[in-house]
Length: 112
Image (cartoon, rainbow, N blue to C red; front, side):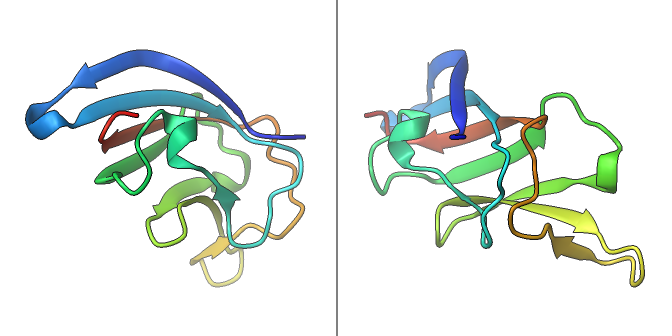
């Protein structure tokens, strides 16, 4: 199953030609090690133009206390959970089913 993308807010023009995009992202049933790759085009931004990305759950649940972050170097959404032994965040294991998770991605960059 692939990720799904849905515009939540039309592009909002900012200073210096930048745009704010708010996109709903539905995750899939097999989380890959290292995170879910997201292309700038998925966010309707020009290649190499991302300045800021914030990720939050659209409908937070308490299941495994999931947390999400953006990996700027590799352009991926990474999923973490609290380790039950050490109480530290660890990346969820490969092939974890996150198909019930919906995220809101707020991204600033140059429009396509």
